[in-house]
Length: 451
Image (cartoon, rainbow, N blue to C red; front, side):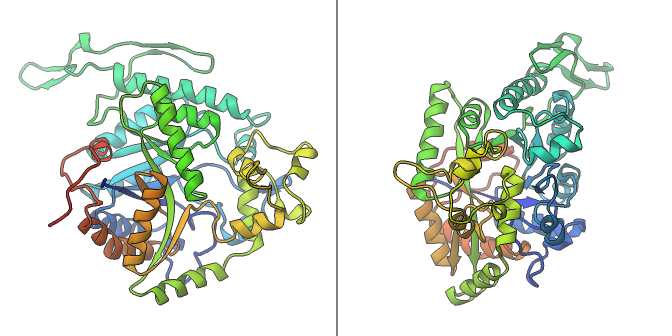
């Protein structure tokens, strides 16, 4: 039996997962501008034993045609929000063990700017920060916002990310020797000159020649997360990521993706463990009937417009403009945008020898209420705990990223009702004070059941 890791997926905006739930009376996500809302959530997570709070982020938004989606604006679907990195220091001061992961896109700024920001967050938190590496999302909107002539091709973004991450790691890992920082009042020596090293990097996309001013932090390098599911994304993850978010479709498909990632990591000569996780929408209540009523209330809020808005933002394809009785091949036949945006969410619906391509109508039905969400469990505490263990066993995943439907209410319910059951079954690692985020996430999996 092995320990499972649990995070919570959030955005510094109206709602999570590209679905509609903020108007529900149980949800507090519309209060996202109030820092106290996030302090309450972080305290609940820290007390319950969650491993980390994860913030997705990006500059993009859904575009339909050549303009912002009206539905995205009206219903708050992947539109509106602040920079979560600026919120984290507040939450770090209010927690003692909770890890934090924030998304930052490669290619938006120079690696030295990102490296300095994450060094600062690692210092403030005492070694509890992670970086979710993304190469871009809603690239059509981002290209317009930043004044680019067009979208950067998918594989070029990964080539740029390779250099970006490699250079950032040079700053974190090579710029200061372990004994360089002295800070001795009696001698008046701040740092040893021999321990400060010039970073020289000359790549195709990034160049740097100079010294990194941020002293080493508890982790030096933030814990590296990544979620790319394309072949290029998996190769990148195998070389750099320490924790990978795997797309949750069916247990068998997810199991294949997990196995593929571990194979690629082995081929890349990785010596450090690779932790795999997937999204999980868990609607849990004291009784099954209560949980299913909550799930029904959420489902009744979802519409074709919500689904199509999210899908357009991710892929550049507006499903509502297509023949509902045809497949996505109608887009490819017309020279559509496949290859630059949301490749995994296009390719998954193109069909395989074992599964015919679904129609547009079937895609809308499949994605309704799911959005970018992963697996879904609904039930009482024991049913949900059983479901978590079954998913872990059938997929090989090391943990799950809880995707709240009703904000803090869902996180508190999972923490109060489900995590204690999993802890009693020996599925949670013992909490270790003063350990870094990396040490906690990478500790050996086997744990003894609580007696």
